[in-house]
Image (cartoon, rainbow over all chains, first blue to last red; front, side):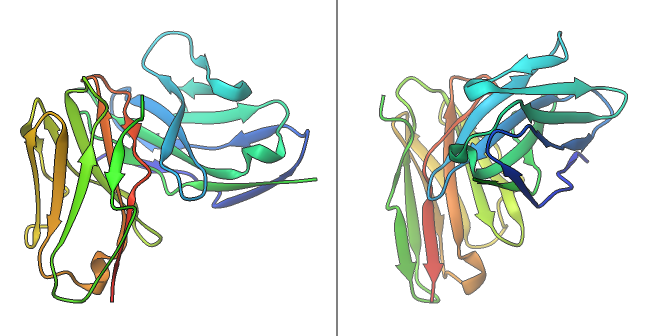
Length: 113
Length: 112
C-alpha cells in the first residue's frame, strides 16, 4: 500500500530564510505527487504537482519541489519565506489507475519575524 | 468561479442523530471526492464519484456512512446515528477528471 511520510510535524523559520519541507513516499512505481497548503479554516490549495519529466517543478508563490526517484522523495523548497507562508503543508500521492490521494500527516510551518 | 461549496460550514449534532453534509462541485467538473480530516488520523479518503457514478468507496466506514451524487451539481455525505468519533472536518473536492483536485473549505462536524 502507498504511504507518505512527512517527518517534521512542525517547522519554524525566520522571515526571509530559506525553507525545505520533506516528503517521502512508499510506492513501487512512480506516483503522481502533489503539495497542498492549508490555511486556518480553509480547504487545501494546490501549490504544485509532479507527473513526469523535469524533476524540479515550480509552483505558486515561489515554491518549488524536487522529485527524487532514488530517494523516493518530493521535498518542497522556497528560497525566502514570508510571514504569510505560515500554514500547514501536505504532501500527497496518487497512483496509476486510481485518482484518490494518500496524504502525509502534514507539516505546520511557522514563520517568525 | 465560486469554487467547491460545502454547506453547512459547521454542524453540531447529538449522539445518535443523523447528519447530512452537502457539496456543490465546480461547474463542469465531472469528479467529486470526499475526505475526512482529524487530528489523530489526518486526511483520509472516503469515496469518489465520476460522472455521478460511484467509483471507489474503499474509505467509507461500512456502517452508518453513505454518499450519493444525484445530479452533476451536488453530492451528499450522510452519517446515520452519529457518534463522537465521527467528529471531524469533512472535505469535498472536485476535478475535471484529471488528477488535480480543488477542495472546498470543509464542514466541521461536532457530535456531542
